[in-house]
Amino acid sequence: MKIVVAYSGGLDTSIILTWLKDKYNAEIIAFCADIGQEEELKGLDKKALKTGASKCYIDDLTEEFARDFIFPMIRANALYENQYFLGTSIARPLIAKRMVDIARLENADAVAHGATGKGNDQVRFELTFAALAPDLKIIAPWRDWDFKGRTDLINYAKSKGIAVPVSAKKPYSTDRNLLHISFESGILEDPWVEPPADMFLLSVAPEKAPDRPQYVELEFEAGNCVAIDGKKLSPANVLRTLNKLGGKHGIGRVDLVENRFVGMKSRGVYETPGGAILHFAHRQLETLTLDREVMHLRDSLIPRYSELVYYGFWFAPEREFLQAAVEESQKYVTGTVRLKLYKGNLIVAGRKSPLSLYNPDVATMEADQGAYNQGDATGFIRLNALRLRTRAAVQSKRKKKR
Image (cartoon, rainbow, N blue to C red):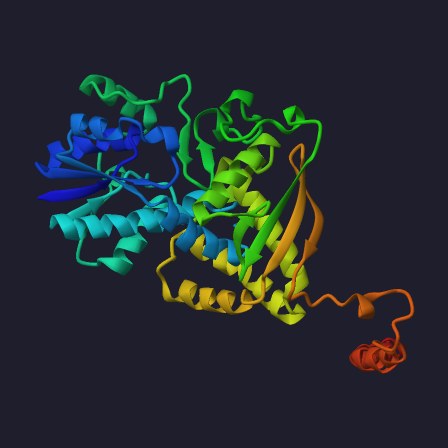
């Protein structure tokens, strides 16, 4: 038997390699997607081979991740429960997609992941496998083995001589990629406890950010950021640049209790400096370039689109259907947004577009040279008030009868 395993080098997946090899007497192919973890990838291939894998793929997917997954989500203004930038959620379908590619290349029989039976990731991985390779066997160790929690895993790792970057004193579970880093478990399971100051990796605390604001200009074409301060950049480099800028000014920290797809609430702490800037700037440009009704209709779809990403339905027809509508709305989202970054705050300092629908000749409070006849508003209001007057008259009659 040959199994392709999603491998990160963390506590869970380090143990999974050894456990799968022993349980199934299988050949293990480890796969790690380079989607912006940076220093976390150092020595990972050697560690995988030492832990039980016969081969380890480490594929640089950063540009594909930014171009084909993060940017489409930004164009949709996706924000789960109005707070979460979906950093972990959007990475899973790409990782699972590449796992399927490797499984085909290696003639593997199965794919395996390290997601727990309580979390969302198990659903995201397995829905993608179902959509792209329904014939492959799926193995989910957390739903199969006898370990009850991370303390058991730490003890098992020690007994097998597996080096893992986790201790009982600081048992944080982290997930890092180009869009964000997340923290959960351990002390963070108490939503009343403030996150330790030394936990954050991508951003300074807002109160320790520079005392002077920094201005930055983002240029967009058809909903995509293509340049920062006049410098053309690839999608991945847009995020890298904005992560540094945002982190410097304490932008993008989110601490929330979210509703998992499997039914429970969980507390997560996130750093998404670049994503927060990109999301905010994109929205500011849309205020100039999107038709009112298109904007309102698209906005009504944001919660549903965000749920589909969070739940794992990236490769589902309903997400593709909504994406097509999003792409139609983004055709004219072209222009430049100037932002002021200051102590955790994003402040708009200007926006312009060659395709702007904002007409100062119409919007002015001064004489508009005939561009807008204010008298027309009388009939407009009368017609819109018709149903309200009718309702009020009926209610008045009913009150009199009483």
